[in-house]
Image (cartoon, rainbow, N blue to C red):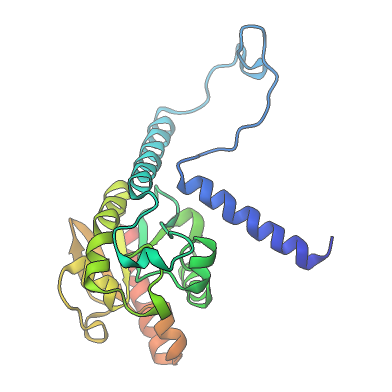
Length: 250
């Protein structure tokens, strides 16, 4: 198998595993040998080595995953606004349901619409660089990423007010299910939706706000950085992310 084909298969496998995780699966079952009493032979006579704290954290994590799955099930094959007419896939969200940090963007682009996952195009790669190279975090393990609308607006235009209103209840339920310590609003539409007012992002980026008791940081959308790729803009975003890191460490 060529390296190109292998990379393509691995990318598809990775995306599918992320999809299973977003649907509420926390493990991939495998066959094991069972005793006649249906207990695992490897577990007989061995005390549990999982601490109470670990068990509590695992239950909390599963509960958050279950809540997210319930929100996704409620969303269904959504036809609540006209964005459903041209979409290929609903882009619900991806990442760790137990993450302390959630990034909220505007809406899916062409690549996201094609594959059904948020932030996987050019802007997505830039966001991944910010998270992993800039912040030293792992995108899949340390963050959850979603958008204010779950279907691609035609031509990547800004979502309209009716479209945002149709999708906002599901965004609110996503954030309620995850209960992160910090939310980062990427760009004006996300910031305006979460704060319920028109936000002049160039003036208010880098400032702290609150969303239903959760710390909310406003910053530029990665697509803005790609369009205006200056040292000053990159420094401003990293200043914002350093504030986020400091808050997460408290």
